[in-house]
Amino acid sequence: MARFRTWVGIALAGALSVSLAGCSSTGGKRAEDARKAAAAQGRAAVNTPRWTIAMITHSGDGDTFWDIVQSGAEQAAVKDNINFLYSHDDEAQQQAQLVDAAVDKKVDGIIVTLAKPDAMKAAVARAEKAGIPVVTVNSGSEVSKAFGALTHIGQDETIAGEAVGEELNERGRKKALCVLHEQGNVGHEQRCDGVAKTFHGTLRKLYVNGTNMPDGQSAIGAKLQADKSLDAVVTLGAPYADTAVKARTDAGSKAEIDTFDLNAGVAASLKNGTLGFAVDQQPYLQGYQAVDLLWLYKYNGDVLGGGKPVLTGPQIITKDQASALAGYTERGTR
Image (cartoon, rainbow, N blue to C red; front, side, top):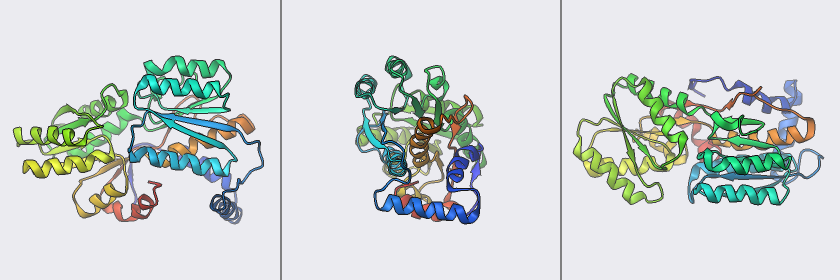
């Protein structure tokens, strides 16, 4: 597989999965084969108690990114003999209520996103008071420790944005539009601000309603029509990349469309040149490692990260790597 340009070292997160496979190449292969067989047959690879872990995210309906996160968590849950519960709501107050409901159920661990941390603080504190270990994923790395979480798993959004700014520079772009599809999401603001920090050109923000794709398409198209000097559009989620491509066509623009996050559609569009590049934060790994870390904490008192976030990205993915990743995206793990 072609080398990916990586801004951060993510060996620590990968090392955990490797260590569970065993130390020798022979032993590691046997352990990996055993895990695959157990997952295929729906059987656990361990005989630890059947703990219950709840994951509560800020996902809206139909967001393929969170399907990948959930898939990773479910795979780890099978291996670890975990009863896995998943729920989501893109409204912060409702998400907090889902966390409260998990606390009331007396689950053994909670995985939660902190896209809107102020609204989630009390709910996370309630879990901590009840003695339920919490791992945060994807968003909220800057407040995760202060909220009492064991660790945070995801990418640093500012670093990811800076990586995009540098990539735009390398591509000779001069004027870019950063499309934010969820107002109030601190991670999205950090991404665009990170782009602005390293991008040598001009960056403008555009806020759209991420639950209404036609409106988003119209808003992006209007900007591209009004300003023909825009030569790049950066979307903050894989499902919105295609919307931006359609807007570009409607506007008769030649702007390059780039995106955060990866799915099968993005991989195909990278391969055929419809998109310029994508930023992968490995959502499957976020879900998988969150469940695995809670299992390790319950089983062995292990904590990963040493008080710092465990980074899963960013990786800049271009046409050169798209073919190698196609098989993974089609099966829903990248």
